[in-house]
Each structure stands twice: as C-alpha cells, then as structure tokens.
Amino acid sequence: MHRNLIPQSFITDIVAPACGNDKRIIEAFLTTPRAKFIDEAMCRRPYADDALPIGFGQTISKPSTVALMTKALQLEPSHRVLEIGSGSGFQAAILSRLCTRVYTVERIPELYRRAMSIIHKMRIVNIKFKLDDGNLGWAENGPYDRIIATAEAKNLPPELTSQLAEGGIMLIPLGGSIIEIIKENGETRQRKIADCSFVDFVCGK
Image (cartoon, rainbow, N blue to C red; front, side, top):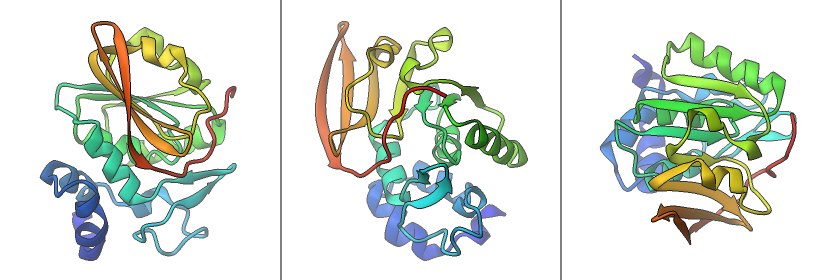
C-alpha cells in the first residue's frame, strides 16, 4: 500500500494542519506518495515541507501549499477541474482523488511527458493532459467547476475567467498572494486567502 511509504509526521505535521484536518484530502495524500514525483538525484527528502526543483526552472510546490489550495477549492466528487501548470503532476494527482476529472495544461514538453508517464504508471485514469500555453486554458472542455493555477501570474488571464462555470472557484497566485476568484451571476469577486511564493506564469510552449 502507498500509505506505508509515507511518514506519519508528514501527515500530522504538514498536511493535516494545512488542510484543516480534512479527511478526504489526507486520504488523497496517503494514496499519492510525493516521492514518486521527484527525481531522487535532486532531493532525498521528499516529505519535507519544501518546494523542490523538477528542472526547467520549475518546482514541485510545498506539500503544505498543495494541501491548502486543495482545501480552498472546496472540491466535490462531481467536479471537473482545470489545472494550469502540470509541473511534476503531483497537484493533479491529489485533485484526481477528490473529483470526477482533472484537465491539466503544461507548456514545457519535457515536464508534460514526464508527468504523463508518472500518472500512467500510478494507474490514475481521470486526468487528461495538454501541451499548450496555460493562459489560454482548455476551452473545448469548459466550463470548469474549479480552476487552479500553480504559477504566479502578473494579471488574471481573461480566458481562464471565461472558462469558469457559474458558481465556480478559481485559485491563482497573483502579486505574492493566493487569490480566490468566485463567479456569481456572470461577475467575479476576489479575495486573498494566503501569502505565497511561486515560479512565474509564462506564456508560450
């Protein structure tokens, strides 16, 4: 079982406090070993609360940040989620345990292929990948109940807002903060939910 590979302290000291002891999120972490998403040559401490390099100037986010953002999405089993920035594939894998389908977009070909390979080996079947510019989202499969961006943007891409379903929630790092955007009656409202530090949101493949 995957859970035997994961230190208990990782759950009790890092994941549980960040997700408000949400049992579904804790179970998602227990069945998704973070070590599988990290090159052993880069780090021998996959269960520390650190952002770690995955190549090409990108990182796998701190597990506490992944837990916090997952909690903030308020996921239901019926939800369809768009992720901008597949990176290592870890955030998408966590989301996949909590919703019906994850659509994830990555601009770097090497990371796109690596993340797909890891997810395939883990036999996770409800994630779809696309190699493209994340600012454009993935319009043909929208609208989405939830959207999450894993890199910092300078401005809110309008294409993402347009692909958010009525009543939907989007999380995006802007200006050093994680911003929650809720769409109601065709309009959006924003609020800061936490400080953050992410790699930059870059246009183009």
